Amino acid sequence: MANALVSIQIIPKTPSGEDSIPFVDEAIDVIEKSGVKYQVNPLETTMEGDLSNLLNVIEKMNQRMTDLGCPSVISQVKIYYKKDNDAKMDVLTEKYR
Image 1 (tube, one colour):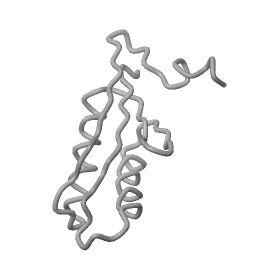
Image 2 (image 1 turned 90 degrees about the horizontal axis):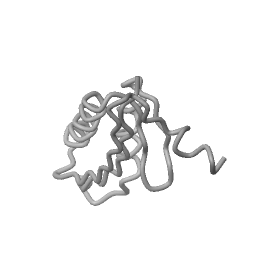
Image 3 (image 1 turned 60 degrees about the vertical axis):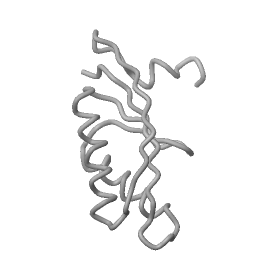
Image 4 (image 1 turned 60 degrees about the horizontal axis):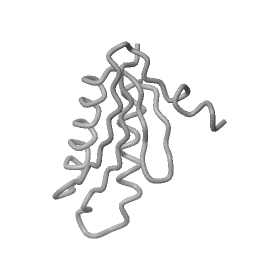
């Protein structure tokens, strides 16, 4: 059950000042491989699931950036948490769809 929504915007400092989009794509690939439910939006990606698992995914995303040679990474994170396991993207956005 999902007890959290976590939105992340990852901003890597690229090794040679190149475009960061391919690096962001690699970070999204980390999310894809994790198996968590997620939605990519223009400025951030939102994941749904167990909070500790989602934070672990963020750690792996940052590690992937350093594995690719990024000297530093900024991760802007927003967390929505509900202890009763009812944190769902669809529930929060249904009135807009």
